[in-house]
Image (cartoon, rainbow, N blue to C red):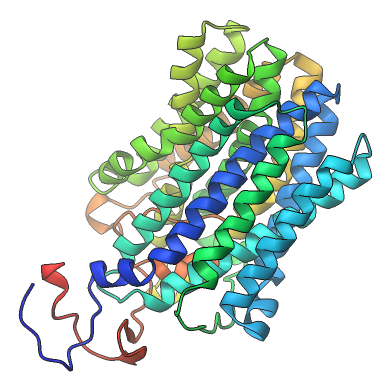
Length: 443
C-alpha cells in the first residue's frame, strides 16, 4: 500500500470489508437460514401430503412478500435506522418461522406466514445492500458487490444441507432456522456502523425500459420464473421421485451453488462476445439440461446432480447478463432506475413461477417442474434469436462491463460500478469526500 498521511481516507477494499465484516457475517447467517427454510418447507409439506399446487401457492406467497418488502420496506428503515430495523425484521422472520410449527394444515396460515417472512427478508436485504453502498467507494463498488454476491449465494446454497441435521417433518429444523435469524442479529446489533439514508427509490418504468431493452426485461422476468420454481419446488420434486433427505439436500445445494462456479466465467465471456448471442446460448443449454431431467424421469443421482448444477448454474447468471444487456442501451444516469425496474420484473416472475411450476407438476408429474423451466428458458432463447435476426444487438466493443448483481433489492443497483459516481465515504472518519481513492491500488 502506498504511504498516506493522516488525512487520507481509508476507502480501500480491505478497509471497507473489515468495516462491514459484522454485516457480512449477519448476511451469511441469514441466507443459510433462508436457504434451509426453502428446503424444509418443501420437504415438510410433501411429507404432510400437501399437493404440488398447494406448495406452489405457499412458495409464491413468499416471493409476493419479497416483492412487497422490496417496494415498501424502506419506510421502516428510514424511520428507525438500519440497526434497529435489522433487528426488527430478523425478529419478525424468526417469529414467522416458529409459528409454522403451529400452522398445522391451515393453508391460510402458511400463506400469511410465508408472505410475512418474505416481506421481512426483503427488508433485511435492503438494509444490507444500502449499508454496503454507503461504505463502498466509486473505485471499490464492483468488488464490494461481488464479495456480497458470493457471500449471499454461497450461504444460500449451503442452507439445504441443514436437512441432514434433523427430521424435516418435525419442529426441530424450523426451530434451527429461526435460531439462525436470531443469531444474525448479534453481529449487526453490536456494530458501530452508522445509519445511512436509503433515499428515494426511483424506477425507469417497465414499459419504457421494455421499449429500450425488451430482452433485458423479458430475461429478468424469465429468470424469476425459473429460479423461484426450481429452487422453491426442488425439494418437492426430490421427494416425489423418491430421494431421501440427504440426497434432496445435496441436490438443492448443488443446484443453488452452480451460480458460484459459472457466473464469473460467463460474465467474462459476455465482455468478449455479443451479449445477445451468449444469452441465447446459455438459455438454450440451460433449457436442454432442464428438459433432460424431465425426460429421464428418475435419473441416476449422479446425472441428476450434474443436470441440476447446469440448470441452476446457467439460469441464475442470466439475470446479471440481462441487466448488462439493458445497461448497454441506457444512459449513465438511467442505470440505477433501470436496475430497480429489472428487480421488479424479476420479482413479478418469481411470484408467478412456483404456481406455474406446481401446475405443470400436477399435470405432468414431478418432471413437469423441469418441463416448465425448459419452456421458459427456450422462450427466452427464441426471443434472443429474434433480436439477433432483427440486428438488435450491440457489438462487444460497445458493451458495458459485466457485473454480478442482486435481484432481491433495488438498492443494489447503486452498488453497480456502471452507475453514476457518488461522493466517497471515509470508513474511519465516517464522512464523505470527493477525490480519487489514492490507496486503492495497494489493497
